[in-house]
Length: 256
Image 1: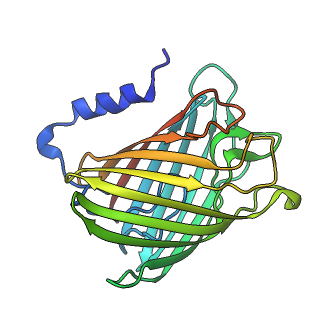
Image 2: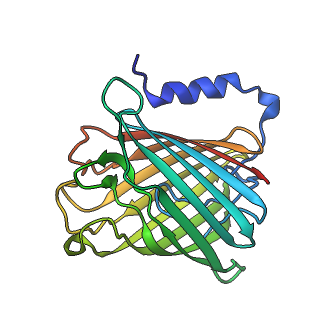
């Protein structure tokens, strides 16, 4: 039986007892800083000696799992793998190679200055094309991310920006890309975010027009677990989608 991702989000919300609520990576009392806006990376990292497990439920029976670890301060390394048609009756389509993630924050945030991180992430998102050996949304590739937080009347605000270059398309389709985003905490355990990925690839096979506008709702279910409902492509530029694309993401962080 097919069910909307909102159904699973509400089911999880119902099953977890209220007394176990803590702060994960959402809300004004979050234990961990945001490391993605929605798809694109921020300058945030997990603390030294911690690991992070992410699982994504995507359209067309898609699943993707990711593992990251922080062996040193301000440095994370990880691996990911997934595909589409994994859930359902169609033949699964798996990505050809695992995704690789490396991030190093070269400058920590101060009162006057933002945090800055350099990284590489070869994991795309969305529908996977075996013919093109790529996902619908390009991986960030090599990137530089800048992040700054501010206190606001309703909680904690984050602003993010970055420049990236994906190596997935053929050389003629590649382009330097820019992205921007923000996140706002609501109460102690909830955050909402928005991301504009200009997606400046020179290829019209996947997008009718350049530009992806994505949104995210985050809820800290416990100290270690954060549940995220992602709404992708508000501009309706994906050729293969007829409506707003909905993802569900589970993030678990703990110490080694």
